Amino acid sequence: MKHFIRAQLLAAAFCGFAAMPTAAFELTAAHVNPAGEPSNVAFAELAERLKDSKTGLSMLVFPQGQVGDEKDAIEQTLLGAISMTTVSTSNLSAFAPSAGVFDIPFLFNESAVQPWQVADGPIGTEIKAKIEAESGLKVLGWWSGGMRHAFTRNVDIKAAADLDNLKIRVIGSPVYIDTFNGLGAKATPMPYGEVYTALATGTIDAAENDTSGYRNMRFYEQAPHFSLTGHFFLYKVVVMQPAIFESMSDEQRAEFLEIFEDVTKRQRKLFDENFAADIAFMKENKVTVTEPDRASLIEAARPVIEKYEGVFGADLVDRIRNTR
Image 1 (cartoon, one colour):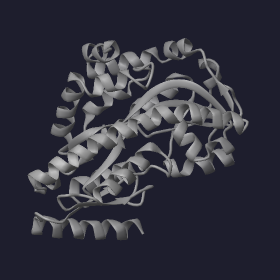
Image 2 (cartoon, one colour):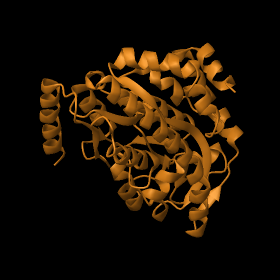
Image 3 (cartoon, rainbow, N blue to C red):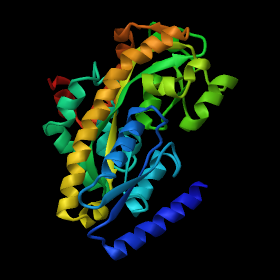
Image 4 (cartoon, rainbow, N blue to C red):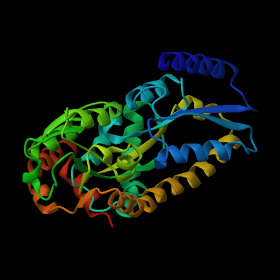
């Protein structure tokens, strides 16, 4: 089914480039996020807003991995088979290494203010330009993937030692793998769609995600021990095929960007609003929520932090940490 969808999208894209429409213009978007997750909600809202477009724009959204995983979505965007997608910096860094600076563990202490001071300021502008040069994609904006935390089948993570030898599913990114191996766990890359079953069967002992993902994917049913480790803040970068962006008329681009800015504000706000509700939901569903000794986690991850400071430059990393 995925291959059929990709073929249809690619054919439509080539027809669109050939016609170079100036009136009716259908954008396409794909993402991996489940129903109820803020990026899913944001794309649905963007499509709904464009139904009333004054310049002939519309949007067709393929949610929940219909065209494949995030790396597939990036490749389809590069080909022009889809117009745009939103992906984690960890997956984008395979195409634009500069995006990986934001995946350094414990770089952010909170998710409501500092990440947006960084992304919307000079550092965000600097990293955006690097991503565009490295990947060939246009960066439309920065969405939230929330602060990420660890959850397990049987163990309350109160300190770094509680992660010893736990087989934990991580995003297949070097920094994620290095971080959890450095914390004493056994980092296990695995497709997102396989996590629930892997927890149920004991193939893995633990995983990590934001609170919305944990709730919406019902991971609490198999891993009812949630620890507020806050090991990564995840940006979801919204990227577009530049040729598609440029093929819109000036009026269409202006309308699209105005609506996109509104939706971006809403997407970010949703994560903040959802956090308290997600924690309350967990407790109502008999999830043990633990606030760990974060200092012990940071100290255990110190060699990994220093390794990636060396990769991206200590000055840049300090600028991010010290942005207020």
